[in-house]
Amino acid sequence: MRYTTEEGGRLNNFAVEPKMYAAEPPSKKQQTFYVIAGLGAVVLIGGLLAIAVSVS
Image (cartoon, rainbow, N blue to C red):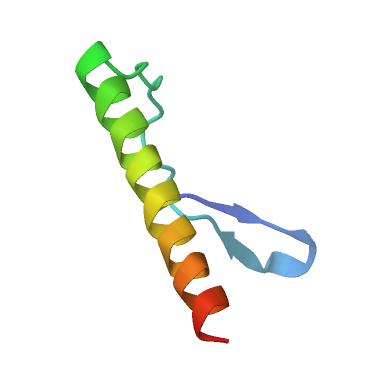
């Protein structure tokens, strides 16, 4: 375990850091899915708002 000794003899423990990696950009298939899911969310929210306005 990694630690440092501070003044007065106190030990300061540090958490083990995870390995870093670079994120990969989404593929065309993933991008298409994100667009479809976004449009579905917009339609769902729009429909819920329309129902709420019509009921009130």
